[in-house]
Length: 516
Image 1 (cartoon, rainbow, N blue to C red):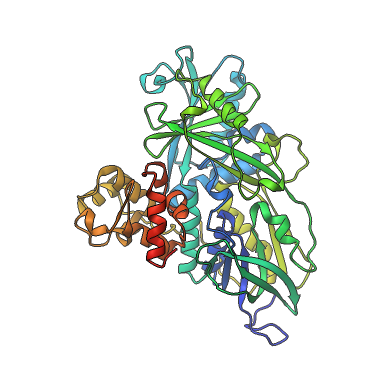
Image 2 (image 1 turned 120 degrees about the horizontal axis):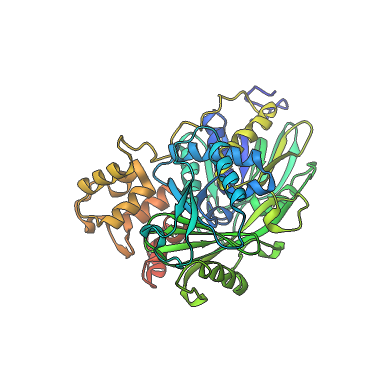
């Protein structure tokens, strides 16, 4: 194990660990490593959570359907992580009840009951309610459903703002000493003595890249968390072997106006054996997803939902709800490409969602590639990554992220509702929906956004949809947002409810302010 501050050839180390990729796995590794005392650099060629990590179904869940594929280790770990994430990030994540209607021709009762019992117990002790049978004719459950549905089950999982989860991990990493560079791409990596010498280049299309000219850095070890580009990134490393690979699976979602009352979600079984979620979303909407379509490398950067996927999701929901959905009802859609580990399965729904970590060398400076994984298990993945890299890094402090709250997650006693009441008392000029969104987004750090404002006008320019200059400036200066898209769709979801001219007005403000 190397323990000195210099390599044996006498050259100073720039970093102990270079993390390539600003999705949830990369940000999670950077946070964990920085908190253990390592000198860390994270580079992302676009924006944080610009791709897969902002295009999920936004669930913290064990993955009920994965039990059918005997993914018991994955489900157990994910259920345990669900409990931890609710605890360390109570502002951006919260429990949610899921209703599973029992249609004719669906999975048999014994299978559902057995699966739910296992789901309740596999993760050990849980603070969430157990599953139970329900009568779907109860008013709150019947709202919007077709009258013929009478029986079902309800179980617990949780929801999370995926893109904010990434941003907050990166923010905590930075506050613990890590360097975060967005708009910066890795273009080559070669072994120089006992270090990787890595060439970094500003991305030409990225607004305000962190560096303005190519730069070379040295690192003891590298984590390749490039997601759908993991294979491509690994190919840039001189003398690193490639084992395994990724299967690119596109998952698409649609958003429609609110389908039903209540704050519960539905898990709908389809005739093809797949399931579709309907999830309350941003107060006024319902999120529906997801599809599973194996795609090629040409769809990595800008995946788009197809007409067939839209029709599939509309038909799946229309089979259960009185309202017949058509593509005309879709107010927004998004797609992401999931970089799943290539385990040889031919069907997208059967490919493992578990993560695989591969070391690229037997000795000397090391590169660790991350394949697969899911949003829920990012924190544990980071711990496992550092365990594998420990022989190649300086001595580290013990694992710590299972207890420490993410930025804003240290809410005062009383839970979120009590916290929200305090926000409304301190800033009484806020409308309740806006106060709720801000309280969820920033938690205990909401004062960093609102400051000493005593009126809405004190927050600067009003961009519409509840977004003000004060919030936009905070997101640029603190959370690396560099474009209107990053602010409206990743750091917040204001894009769903703002005026059509808001993106351009925001882009103009960024340019005038020298922030874009």
